[in-house]
Image 1 (cartoon, rainbow, N blue to C red):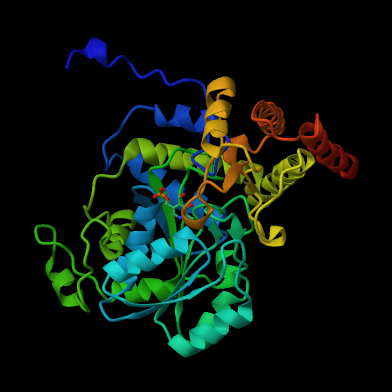
Image 2: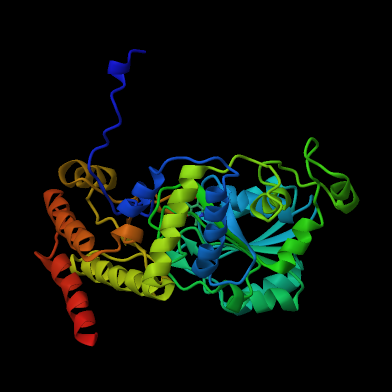
Length: 415
Ligand SMILES: Cc1ncc(COP(=O)(O)O)c(C=O)c1O
């Protein structure tokens, strides 16, 4: 192939207002273009230590084992589940959208005996429903999503850690879509392992999965420690135990040794991603994680009011919606994909479709990370009004931008 046929990367300007990925904060992109250093350079190892400390604040935890898994968010999920689960272990997955199915599938691939409970897309579970299932299944691990981007729902988790402790289960949570945009209190809620990604409310690109592991789960993972040949020392052989974790790349026992003071060689840390993940956390810690959640609440409320102001019907139980994404029913007669295409080509704005039973029925509009901003919300609503009109939908003229502005005016009056 000639290089002239593959010109230098020059992506079109886009405002990414779907359910993620969103535009990365320019500070994150700048950090990612910083020069590389070697993986054991003192500069690099101190960046790694800083990443651990910064993400403890993001996860609201004191867990020593807080670091990055290299890969997209599902790398974090796989690492958590394959390191915790041995074949035959019982797992309970409460499924309320596509990503509950993903947890189920990954746990099945680990050889676990997976039990699920389901609720309709657009709803969440009550603590009573969860406890009843935990008591019936008696799982080793309960694996749950906090915010399911497919349905926009945010599962309340404040009681689940306590329920799991009462029934001697570990609690794993996938907070990819919700962390930093909705309250998440790892220690206070007793969540044993949490994983996330950068491309939603953290304002970075996909490709790094922050993880935090509480001591109860560290004990389980450490109980399966098998250091690979070539770097294994006599003391490692003496400590070996349990069934070897079935993935080398996602073997969290080894990855913990790489991030810990021993710096035992494992993978080559993805340096530029680490720079980016570090800047995402720096941005959040600078703002204050609580204030970042409040920012997502405000801009999510403005978008919600805006789509309603246009006359669109919102999908699901709005009281349990994540702050950072809203799903709207595509009005009758409007071709969903063509209208999304017009948003992209005429206005440079991306909004999302959905999966499974919701595909072609709803659009998902996000307000997250760097794009949880007033100008991004107002522009999207203004463009959406024009596109809906062009496809013959009945919309209230100026109703979207007007309703969103009212939310902003009210919040300024409160301040
Ligand atoms: C809740 C949830 N979990 C997992 C994932 C998978 O993330 P990734 O595509 O970064 O692997 C996503 C992606 O949208 C998500 O929203």
